[in-house]
Length: 638
Image (cartoon, rainbow, N blue to C red; front, side, top):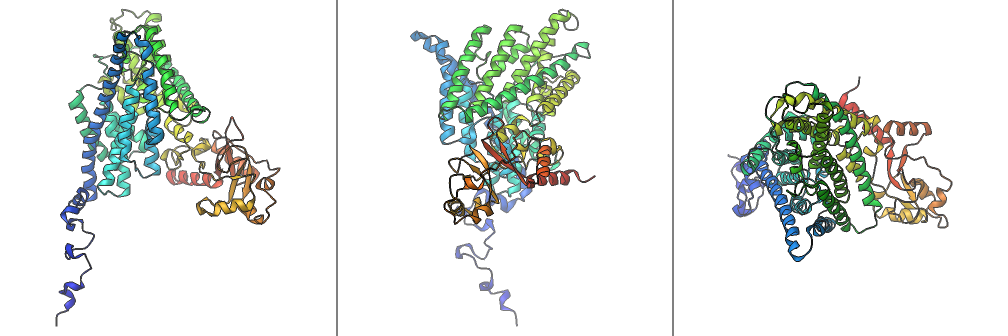
């Protein structure tokens, strides 16, 4: 007799009547009106195939987005400039009106960032790195919208930042959204972020090879052939879109034809690289200091901070405009991106005085814009600084070496243009700390290989000296300043000697404090309402429990329990006379570990270097051990 279970449909797995006998996890059997494109892709393609398809789609969307933000910023600034001059017919000089446009743009951006788009501040590259490593690459799609809009308003309004960083963040958000909406696994969604970053850089600079190197140097920090295929696909598509809409030439054009050969003047790359490192170090230090001052010490409503920065920049840029006498083109100035000034430098149309004014004014304008929480990037300003520095060295070399009119540089324009390129590469290596990207981005902008030797010399000098002067690169330093942990990033897990890094790279920023004025019972009752706040110890501060100011000591959890019933005793009494050892964020991990060992303690409070009573975080022995184990796992034992 035949087994009825083999033919009786009632014995099959239960399923909704309208779906028939199919298993409930088969997306192809969903009712047509409930199916999504993600369901269709899952039914017909493997996850690897879906990833490649989405890389193609990401390249298309990112290319369009990058071209869009480029054109929108250019059109907005041109409109602002013409509007300022149109108002002159009412008897108001344009130079009275123009400084207010960056301020108005800053006010709009500050209000929107404060209310709806906190992730749209700054360049976007630090946020992209934090999302990639700490949140599995999940970036909300609305971030792309706000980035496009706010960067257009801020930079197009005349503020002195670039578009490339926001383009990276915008494209990373688009790629991350594609991965999520089409049902990729979490690891694949994370892998979509560098795909978007590469596509955005390729379209922004019209430099595809540099885009690939940037991803591996700044985002992935480790070469992986598995990631390379998807990145290349997106870069090719994005670059094709950009070239179709914007033309074949790079965004920043430098037509320096002919072969430079090998000549003694190329030794200028040595002082140029060293000076780029020093200026880059001063720039990063100034930006971080002023950024912290705006965030913590300037008593002003948050939306007004970008407005104040914009007003100062507007006055500075207008003054520089008059001081240089560059009245022909509004973009030949400190306002907005300013690539036209670089092109004038390439053609040796700027004199020494003009170059110095532009370099100094742009320097302070960028520091003001970024520190006051504007929306814009640092790529363009970095190239601007380097180009002006290179032009300055080129002109000084011509003046003091008697090379004017000498063959094969009779026109002298080619020599100054070459120095501009060398300066751009060196400054990029010094500030952004991506030496291979800095080499290839210059090569792709010129198509001229004959400058590769002096370029390599200048770049490696700038990169090495800047790394010696400041251990943590700028984007990571910004994350540390924003209290974002870097423990998951490869740079701080292996190949680099972790002992010489500052404790700010691995410390805990998420603290739960107790007040010296409350009783142990009150503190325990508050902490027990949320078990996630329970710790072995708690920093004690004077005043409010959520404050980090007035740090007085550390109280152990068991001390609170032992005195829970004593209502007459305060936590301040428990830590009375305590003199806790503290460290600052810049203390190197090796010194912190030695302090713990010598004093037989398991944790060290991290306080501000300028205000010892202000608590910033906690470094534990477990943090150091975890970092050491990560390095051993990465490098292996000897």
